[in-house]
Length: 95
Length: 488
Image (cartoon, rainbow over all chains, first blue to last red; front, side, top):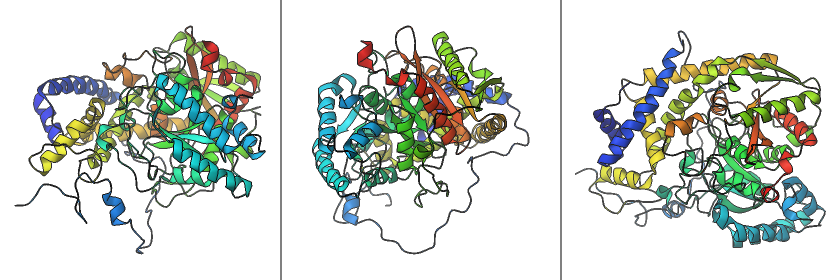
């Protein structure tokens, strides 16, 4: 399948990535050859085969809805690029 | 006695009998790292002061009887995608910056409870995406057998450290071969256990349905002892199997009489280096001489393993890596216009090219219009791959094949052709797709004296048979004992 410039731009938007013009070309070529190779899978007959996510059929891994201690706020803010006493600081998202 | 010639278990025994103190062992390894690691760059972070303090603490607890694990007091290197509380954990990426986890991964906790002494965080391909440890933000790691060659990846740092004698053992992670292939390229032993046996809590995720943590060490016995420490049910990992883990070390024997070993024909055809083929077939003969039976069988679905793997792994990675956005931790870009631009700029500046490539491939495979043709199709082929292994294990106890189609390539030769690099994972990726246990052990050298690895694959929860086969081989051969310095 042919990878177009538009597809590369669309995928970049979905992935929240900004590519330079050179990178766009490189990605287009790379994805193109990788997808061509992956198209090999069209040769496998998968009629009536259930897609398998997990090799062991584990189901419904639940726990009781009981409040457990969480992390200390200060501990979690230690790695913050920008913070105040109690929050992470980011650009305004809603006007 | 050269402390560096001892396996992890041998060192553990000498510590227990007080022939060597924990401080002596830790200091010896830290000094050797200081002297030699500039040649290999196998560590991102070395923990001198912390490790020495910890060593003193561990010695007290060994003396009081509180720590009595066979590995108590033995130093270990941990791959830098495994969280260590208070110790920088970078995934070899710019985007995590100096991120210091506020918590330990479950495996870190388990190692500490067993008296391990963490001496450093080992180098890796960025976010575990790679087969050569060349995509690390902290520079490439070099193969101790020949520093013009790669150590393999993505756990190249751990494998190189064990191989060079600057770590008694290491913890790595394996999503498509990242423990086994570097073990093969560096002439050491590594095992990826059955999916769900080792908790992934605290392992920074690449592909959640494929990732597993496992040991890289000098031999199968060490691997068994390490698995005994890290295999446990963990409530914090929803995919953790609820089973009782019996001691693999206690069960370890060298008796493989009557063991049925299958060799997949399709793994011995084109694309396999002659020297590698010879060495792995010789391994089969050695195992036969010890009483096992050897038989070839067809496994044609194997040729679809690589494309299946790359779709599934990259799709999961695109989701897992969406959390890296510069908001709560790690690197944040300096200049941005708004929230979305903050994410875009941080990610574009913070991720390396291989990571970006895989995120985009994964995003593409999951996007509207392509999801059925790619992601859903891959999951169907994954089911067929598992079925093929299930059928094989009705006839055989273990499967033997090469770990990689060649020995370690030269530095700088792999990244320009990503597809070619992906194809070198051909023997390892199907194992992650099927969730099986698999080990790589040294079984020979090529004409340039570079190590060759043989891979032993087991049925689900068949670690005991896998380790037994490797141990039996290692009782009658010396490949795992030969170290790089001797070759030079």
